[in-house]
Image 1: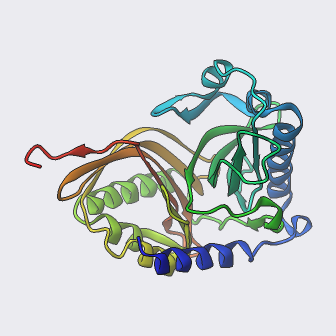
Image 2: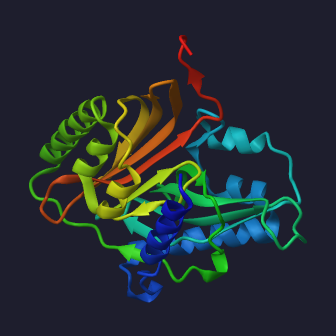
Length: 297
């Protein structure tokens, strides 16, 4: 990737984050999720990453090490560590039912807390689900690295998107979702980048490992200009909100490039648009460390 494109992506990312709305202007369900995310991040700084994740991960949560695994089992196996993980949400949205939502923003990790420079950095993405007792818990957590950090202290209050109200009954909305997802994956098998652009919401967020995220349909088109390789997806799980206006799914992907096969994990989020259609709101793919070279290479 050229330095010019990296700079362009950074500007797009910064522009998207600068749209943040003040917490107090958000709907109550969104404010409650923002509060949960901020409490989660604060606990990580005060009590350590392991304890904070065990406090906020749902019993059936999913993390990726490297494929999808139960989050609580993974973090129970981690030893407490003095390293520091910090993050702050830049965008939060919640379903009309108030039972499902997601948050995303910059993260930084320091192996040595006293070192002013972070060891690693990127963008996090978390699915949150309201539990029976009323508390928000993390249902899925996955992130990507970026070429440079976006300082958490420079990130304004989270932008809170109020979900669109769906038209029609819940059964019809779910049927339309499955139809749209099947069509999207079929299109991806022909031209991956074109499929994302065709099904994306106006404010879509596209994440790829090692690059700054693209925020908005136009930015996504720029990011995916040369991404015409066919992609296949293997669904592992997902959920739909009770109001059938917000849904996510996750699994494995494989992209067939000319000389290698790119494999990794994906998460897609679908939202009802103001026009009543299902649109792609999040397209996140994290490539596995090693790709398979074609046999003839």
